[in-house]
Image (cartoon, rainbow, N blue to C red; front, side, top):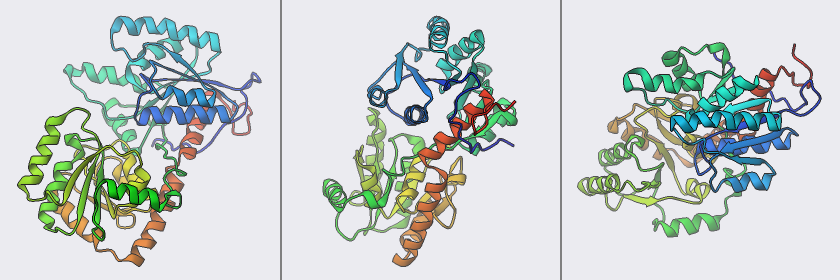
Length: 401
């Protein structure tokens, strides 16, 4: 079975200097991979290690600059075979120049270049497997994806992903380490959200007083299950509630128009509102009585589920992917079969019917569950533990050999 790493190694290598870790990813624009990379780089710097990040750049580089972490811009986002080949030499030069001890690849195209650069320099190579990735091309795509299993240690962001790697790529379970993604529990803390922020958001979204609010956060794309929720609300038949679809369509307006047409056909124009992106998700969660994750395809992790529980909000999530490990079914939320509007309607009805006292008790359980299992600090400590394993360090800084 894959291991769940819990240790942190914050001491020098046997050579007497702090370890140097180089993370490689396509860009630093937005997303969970990017956020995890930055969180990890900052944690390494705070622990006295040397952190390097290699990417094609992006606005999130500013966060590395503020933390004093060196960013090196290279075209590692490119899937052009010629560029990927040239990137091997470029990364090899970075490794030698900075004395890199561990190369951590977080995406497929840069992983191919980083793997061969690490091979040439005798540097430890670690990967993080972030998703299920699509197969196809008569097995060629699967072979391309398999680079993410070539690390000395392969970090899986959930037990679901660990199982997927073993089933599809026959990855040796002994080198898999499960490290769940982590959220900022200071940011997602009910005590830190002012009433003013909540009121401002409620006014912006024109929410009437006294109406229970259901929220489905996530970009507007079909597999996120917005249509399932709309159909569930039609089955539920209540008009004294509001449902918010929070997220961007990223320019795919045809799907937004399809959703709007479905809302109108089901007579839910007063109930369901597509509100676009939100820049204050903690306040959005506090406005909400139940948070939904209706993904029809399995989620590799499901950050929304965890954030909602950290804010003390009950969740209804599909019973697939990482949802099974990120929700305490019957305690912090309910799991329902994917693509089942009737089951979704029943679950929503059950959660909305929970009384105030019971809701408070469940909120406490949800907050504790999220904090104990999915904090940014825990993610960083476990990832440093993986680095320590390949470097042969013990938690006290000694040589494990």
